[in-house]
Amino acid sequence: MRKTSDAVEVLKQRTGIDPDRDPAMLQIADEFRAGQLIYDARTAAGLSQQQLAELIGTTETVISELEDAEYQGHSLVMLRRIAQALHRKLEIRFVPEDAQAV
View 1 (cartoon, rainbow, N blue to C red):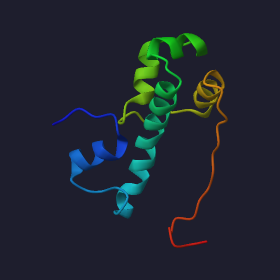
View 2: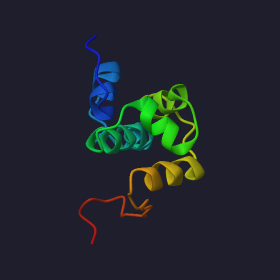
View 3: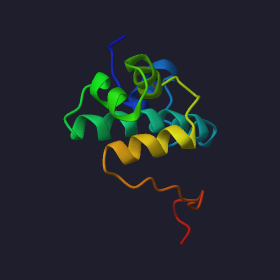
């Protein structure tokens, strides 16, 4: 299996199911996306895992775990620290389950 950090691709590879089209997989996909968001923001900032870890007072191992598509221990406290270190605003929203809904 090809190594990838893209959350949706990991799900597709492991299950053969497109999480964006299968309601049963949507919750899992959301958990995977959290890691992808951290990875994308960190790399866009041009930082290594070690550099981000130093900015927020943790270890490279913690950053690696947070970016892992299978990690489920994301906390708001840690996400806020990452957002602050990357000069980003953390936004949490409720959106309609039905993509057709307004």
